[in-house]
Image (tube, rainbow, N blue to C red; front, side, top):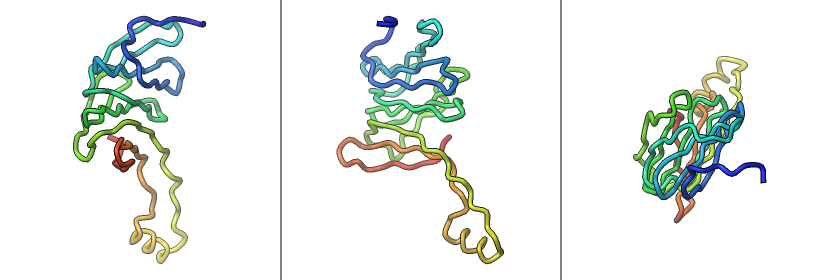
Amino acid sequence: MIATITGVVTPSSIAITPDNSRAYVTNTTNNTVTVINTATNKVIDLIPVGSGPGSIAITPDGSRAYVANLGGSLSVIDIATNTVIATVTDGVPCPIRITITPAPAPQVPTSIEDCKRKAALGDLGRPQGLSAIRASALALFRGSVL
């Protein structure tokens, strides 16, 4: 065993910041996320989130964490301040897993006609997105990153 970390209650999921400095652990029964300093293996913060946090994902730039709460919401955490800056409830019936997908490389139009065609098809590049999977039907919720 490398280390035992106390202060984590019913851990469900873990995400590590891109710089490997912090670990974010969801605590399902007390509706929190524990923040751990990975250099010292010490708890440095406890963030209240929605009901039944099950899964967590951190953006590639390390600025936000998204928590899928089984109670029917997504909590958005600002990594710099370790605070919830938004709670998304619309269209989120029962998320259990969350992932963050990178934005596709923009396709540069090669002509005016190509530009018009791509714009008509909505194919000029999409923002980075997130997906939450519903437990009962694997229905996907898609939305823009806040």
